[in-house]
Image (tube, rainbow, N blue to C red):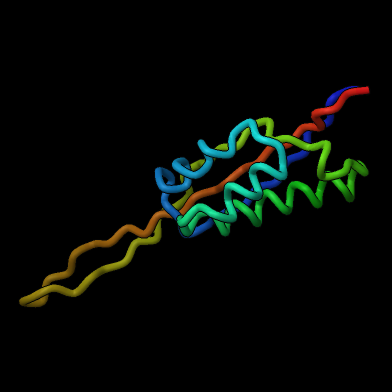
Length: 116
């Protein structure tokens, strides 16, 4: 049986790329159960969004290909920079300082680890 790859992407998430990358390095190459456990106990805000994208990829695999959770492992996971929301912060004497609120796109690619 050939390896099947399943993909899920979370777009326009209000997180910065370096902060998400810090979490993604911990789950890269793990199977689903290990990754879920790691994300559950890490203290970062990005973990919630990454968990949702991971669960979406799992649902895609179960629904579209009939692959069980225990057979899946993370093949690759990466984050791309999204558009920045531009805002202004009022300051003294009528000035305004720009604020750039970053967004990102998280992509999770899974493969079935057992090949028969």
